[in-house]
Image: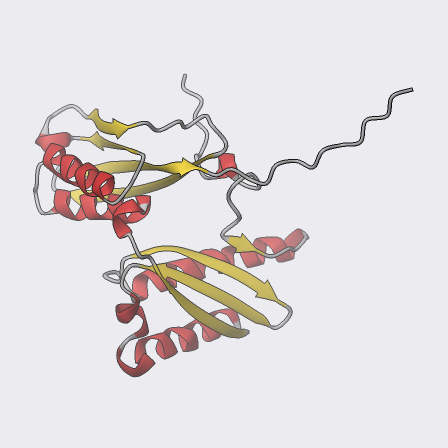
Length: 220
């Protein structure tokens, strides 16, 4: 039986911060957690073609700040900001609080694991071969400066009767090294033969923090 650890959760508080930053106890925690899930679902429904990678939610006493990381900020903002204003209004109706929405651009979408997975999913749904889609995504990521990338597809690949797993990898992806900056993304393709899961690991290099301060040594 395999024991697998989520690559992002494994590195929390070491080289990566939480995507939701707030504190609550008891029933309030459960209510805010469900509200977070509803917010994320609403934002992704608003812009399915906006190439939204992740959302950061930060809560204050009477305000919710949402940061949307996307490769197409113009689609999220809309002409003269109409789309983002409509999104903010719907989020305020959902949460009952004042909502502030910020849009951040992803400069290199080929290095974002979730966007790479979504790109492969769109190709699989258009009946493009999974091997060709993975090879193309790997080549684009390596040209953009990735140190390594691994892509795995699982399901009835090519319409086969029995599900199987296929993967391709280039470079190195040290998944057990905490200081390794590894981005992870998961997406599912809905095909005529069933669901095909796509997992992507992108290694961008090592994150080296400040050196520890030298401690005083007392010699008796």
